[in-house]
Image 1 (cartoon, rainbow, N blue to C red):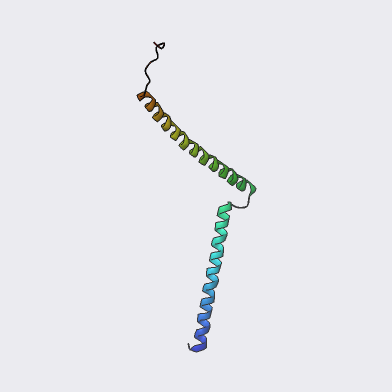
Image 2 (image 1 turned 180 degrees about the vertical axis):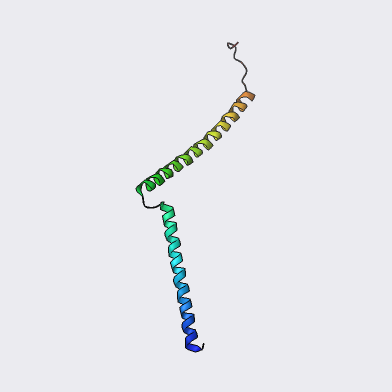
Length: 94
């Protein structure tokens, strides 16, 4: 093999390799897209929407739980402070 034949072979190998990469990249994108949407059925899309709604509600509940824990800690602190600083009983409170 000399000159022109070698160039043709290398060009063919390069073209096939480039086409192979393009094909597999397109195939990977297709599978990724299909996996994200779960296919094209309306039932699957509806379930995906409901799942997203449930995840949002769960996040809101976790936030509310964190806020409730914070309020409980503040209430405990306030009760301790008030217990330490009791005022003397008034004359009519026996």
